[in-house]
Image (tube, rainbow, N blue to C red; front, side, top):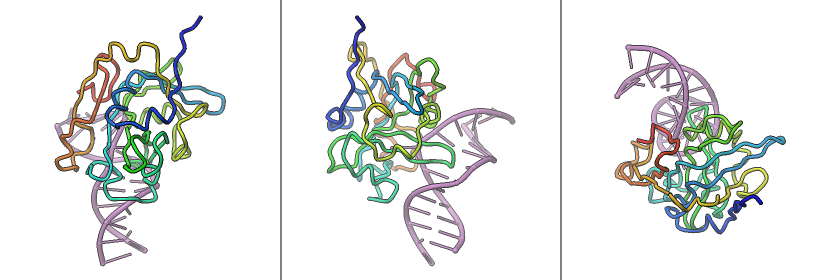
Length: 188
DNA sequence: GCAAAGATCGGCT
DNA sequence: GCCGATCTTTGCA
């Protein structure tokens, strides 16, 4: 009989943000829209640590765009950037703190396009702002822990990408990726 | 009301 | 490594 994967519920995301970032590596991301299914194994994420984090959208306080960040963990935060791309985030930690993780890269399932960067993840999984604020849940978008995803989790930690404006936070080690798996920027 | 910047990507030097 | 595409969001007047 087939080995079952375990669908993650909001309690998984309502924990320390960095711990969630590490634990979600190797888990599968699933997207269903118009009867089509897309997805892949999560291989790269970044953590954003709320109001104190100069690189976070929450740094300047609550706005119309980032209001999902200030809500419950286990919800989906999607925003539009650079006039062309969407970025997928999961709200983490506690409702008291606007924390999130950015999904940067997947090892795509067959039939799912390239996912080697946050803009491409959303393009290949047909993710846009219509998902913003919704709970992470089947069928439209969910995450599952795969058998053995906790084994051989050999990961690297680096500063985040594309946040040179963030002062001292530009050097914070908050990007996590699985060694030997697809990443953005060649894993560097 | 307007201007500037941005959690990116692909192409080119 | 640098640059342009493309347009929403935000900050400031």
